[in-house]
Image (cartoon, rainbow, N blue to C red):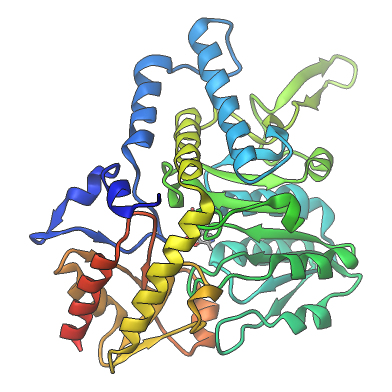
Length: 409
Ligand SMILES: Cc1ncc(COP(=O)(O)O)c(C=O)c1O
């Protein structure tokens, strides 16, 4: 039985009082809270197993390596990848997308080529492509967003051509929560020989993810948005694509051999196996193990149950928010078309004012443009407030939120 009240007992921070009110945390799209199981896994690593990985034959290094590799395996299982070869640990979604841009894009995108990006994207799926296009001279074509916040799917058919090499878009928007039809875009892209890169920062923590069923070439996501620690995230890539790619960064761990040739006076280098070829230097071992614990926690709950719970909360919250005269909500009206994210404004107040007023009652929401300035421009907005839910949020918390909103207006 999925019981958010029981789940809450695992999250020490939810007992905190802020301004004499029990904390209501509705900023989950920015970063989730951490259960004690994750906090304890991190503590246990540093207290009992701390060592570098893949470096030494001693017991601690063997234990750390075994845990770190298992973390890759369990993340692979969580998203139904073929195995840990397809799972590269990075700092987060941003680094994962940059890895693809520089390792794959730098060598595969040239003048005359095209990349399709959506205007729904977080800046981290726009800026790397803009930077790279200035270096390599390829063109970027942007797909627009309809009034209800959904992607303009027809535009993909119109913009795609044999020149298109990669199509980049998010599975779930971090502004509106809208869930995009990955399979539909994957088919259009693959029919034209292009790859797809999915920003899964807002989908992997909230929906069941099956990379093979979705036919994703690259998927980027962040540990800290799915109960894990900060500083760890994942790039999934299809094995056959990763095999052909050159490394992202050079250093230890990612090489098998560095041989100095006394005749050419140069070093010849062979790369390590996947995924280590893409994990240069000492990796973030402990947080990788923390992420494994987070994935275990979510698997115990069942991702279908996580999605169903967030749907119930979102539908309930939207219904009551719409009863308020001065509140405008953006994105799809149907809660089943989205994950648990509600962007809104209160007439006569800036989004920061709304967030500060809610903070007076211990309620945390995000305000600003949420790293989606092009999307805010489409909605003719400078900023918005955003409530976003997760496994430990309850209807009672939404009731308190609505009560304060009614007071504000
Ligand atoms: C959709 C989306 N993409 C990318 C990111 C960037 O994630 P990170 O800062 O963990 O790299 C975020 C973070 O808010 C996001 O919501």
